[in-house]
Image 1 (tube, rainbow, N blue to C red):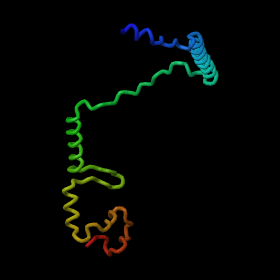
Image 2: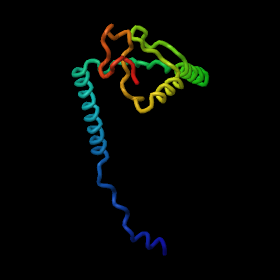
Image 3: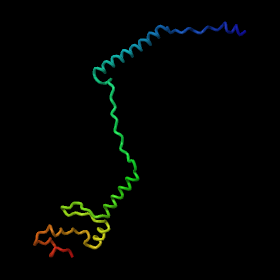
Length: 141
C-alpha cells in the first residue's frame, strides 16, 4: 500500500533557474566591483600623490618622572619653611627684605588700628628738609 500511494504522487518540479545565467551574473558583478576598485585606486593615486607612502611615526618623549617623590616633597617643604622663617633680601637696591612670618605678624599687631595703612617711605628716600605728607616730623604716631 505505501508503494501505491507513492506512485500516484508527482515528482518534484525541477528548478527553472539556469545555472549558467547565475554564474554569469555573479561573475559580472565581481568584475564590476574589481573594475571600480581599480579605477578608484588610480584616481586616488593621481589626486593625492603621497597617499600610499608609509608614514613615519613620531614618538613622544618619555615623561620625566620623579625618582623619589617623598624626598622631593621633604626638600620642597624645607625650602618653604626656610623662606618663611628666615631673613633674606628680595630686592636689595630697593630695600625690600624678607622677614620671618612671626616677626611680620608681631609688627602688624603692634601697629594696632593703623596696621594696614600705607607705610611711610624710608628716611633715605626723603629729601633732606622735606617731611612726608600728613606728617609733621616724618615719624608715625
